[in-house]
Length: 221
Figure 1: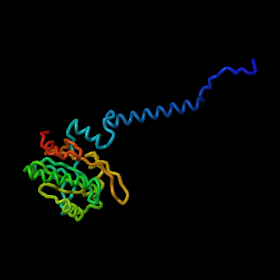
Figure 2: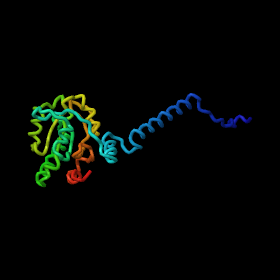
Figure 3: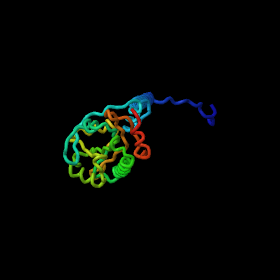
Figure 4: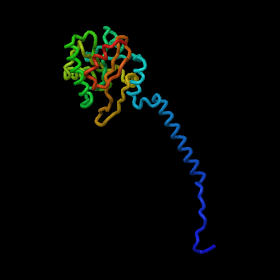
């Protein structure tokens, strides 16, 4: 062979161990994607709220019952409160120390309160804010928040859970995700949840739906 000629090219096969590792990683990835796809209803829902919206869109969802109390310390249950007078309720979730999302929700509810009174709908639709921070939102904190938001108790109610261990079940029922933040605060999603006179969650709307939420609340279910 001429000394200037190059040896014929010989393909180098990948090491067996590398091939096996790649195959195992690929299989794990595919299994993970399949699990996510199944858990999110064939990819329709990638957040807790979106998943709950998808479920509610298919059929009204029952709400679990929990003991709650108001700014006077008076105890009741969520079912008793929501089913007391045949009204449809628009429900949101707050905590009284919140300086971000909850203030926006408070402003939305103030406008809804005005609209309900102006249209004479306060006997058909009620507003309910539920604090998910019972450790800090005692009766005094609820009273201060109600005063700050100028709540009319005939239209807009405010309660918190009596038992802190019930929080996860309540939030899951409505599709609310709460994540601890610095300084003892929380990051959480926000939505308007419509509960019919039979105590079923029937619609979930973005809180930017102020101009149509009352019309949605009055639709038959």
